[in-house]
Image (cartoon, rainbow, N blue to C red; front, side, top):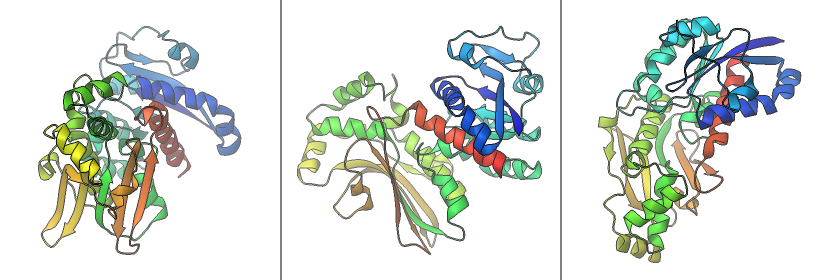
Amino acid sequence: MRQYNLCILGFGNVGRALVRQLQAKQAELREKYAIEWRITGVATRRMGWIADPDGLDPDALLAGQMPAQQSTISDVREWLEAAREDVLFELTSTDPHSGQPAREHVRTALERGSYVITANKGAVVHGYQDLQALAEANGTKFLFDAAVMAGAPVFSLFRDALPAVNILRFRGLLNATSNVILEEMEQGKSYDEAVSTAQALGIAETDPSLDVDGWDAMLKLCAISTVLLDVPLQPQDVQRTGIRGLLSEQVQAARAAGHPYKLAATLERTENGVVARVQPEQIALGDPLAAASDAFMLLAHFEMDMIPGLTMILHVPGEGTAGPDVTAYDVLADFLRAVRA
């Protein structure tokens, strides 16, 4: 039986869902996996740095009853030292341009020999090679299945179950918010009205730019290329066009013709390297993306040298969003993969 000290950096919806899942699975983790845990650190921009190596009360954390910030702690390294962490869950929001400060959080914990699990796309896109090398040098793990299509094990599938395959082409629908907005436009709403509906449903941010302008899908595409194709891509390497410029009349006509618009993400190996693009496309029957039959589906289709085609479809729960519970499960699963490896 091994007890792990857990630190959670970023205690929003996903962090809270993770704590609930840890509690729900506590007996199973102990009996089936010989794992015990305690939360020794929680940190957010609002709460500051909270650490107790003897353990924090999960129920109190979920109820918002936070201990006072330790005034002597001023950065992530001091916080981790005070919490005596074995595992860092890095769950801060993504900066698409640099991946900071998540990259530095991950680096600091890996330097200390801790396992690091993140849902942060930016840290993967902007720091994967260095962070992976650092994890290997320190005999630990850096895992991130929650960063792309939460609920579908995109990265662990290839790492654990599909050795010695080379991806030749990838096509995907990676952003649920754009799916929902396009479906609303198909029903006759203007772009602005569709965005307002998505915001009312809670699946679009007040500023929906990351979704509708293709940034979210682009970052996921960069992560897939960097990790699975071993071809590092940065945002400037991707041809990106969002859905903002589509007119409702265009979208309705495309649906009526049986070729609906989707925000498609594509990677393709060519003689000149990898071509990457995110753009609205009319999806014809027979296209693998047509298998996503409604707005509440995400899809990833891989064509490989050893397998002609493999499609992963995720039916996102609720009103069009994968939700914090699904993302938290990916984080929990990566925790188990890390400590049992």
